[in-house]
Length: 149
Image (cartoon, rainbow, N blue to C red; front, side, top):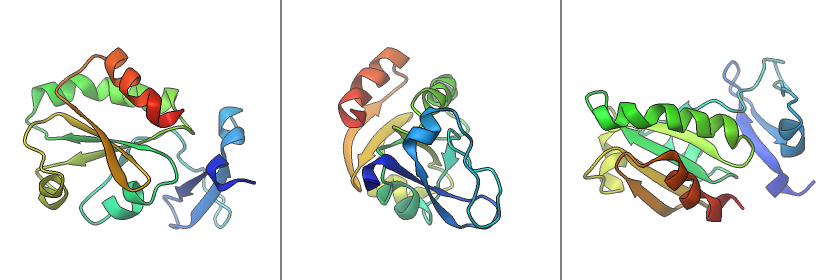
């Protein structure tokens, strides 16, 4: 099977990296870890940190939408439900990650984040788009379309 048709999912229980065929996800089947048989999260929004960003985002086989936010940010809380909806609607085509900039200043600084909410689109290990501010879902989807096609 072509590696572009696989999603790599790390098991939350044992840490094993699992290759999951996208067609199985699209069929609504729930994959389990090959090592410990724990159900694998296929449409969850993952939390990334300065330490996990390279592995979870930059090495992802799927494009990643990274939501950079902070607890005190009202507009960040406004777009959070939209980001959660996108995680469910684009399963197998897009990975969704959240990064708290207050807890992870290294990554926020590296990407020169000066305003939040900020959504980064990372594909092939590099930033390909940046959406600043609380945008409507339709605009976020429009911007994502070219990267998930």
